[in-house]
Each structure stands twice: as structure tokens, then as C-alpha cells.
Length: 81
Image 1 (cartoon, rainbow, N blue to C red):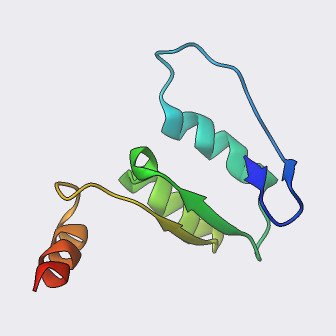
Image 2 (cartoon, rainbow, N blue to C red):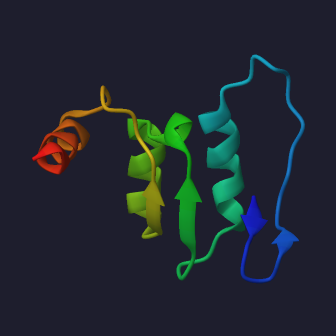
């Protein structure tokens, strides 16, 4: 986890290559605060991760693939026209 404003690494962990990135990210959420804005890549757009962010009241934005969940698919359809 990286703080771009202060240019400092807040948290990092080493895990086996087969470790699920979302599980690791969920552990890192304890290092965030209510005013944190979290940015993440498409591998993190799972229901459990997004639900955890909402439950904690965190602000976030992240990429997702065109084939992900229905609201994302609708956004992609709108952006084509």
C-alpha cells in the first residue's frame, strides 16, 4: 500500500505467488483511515473487497474488466455511444 501524497509505503507484505491478492488487500485495509481515497487495479474489483470498502466507509475508485459485474457492464455500454 502506497501513499502518493506523502510518497511513502504504508504497508507491504510478501506472500506465495498463489496467494489471492484480494485477501492480502483486505488485511491492508486496517492501515486506512476514514478520509482515505483508495485506488486499485482490476484484480481487486471483487464483491468481498468492494463490500468491505463500503462497510468501512472508505472512498475508492478502481478499474474493472468489461466482463465484470452488471453495473460495470452498463457503464461500458454507455461509454461506447
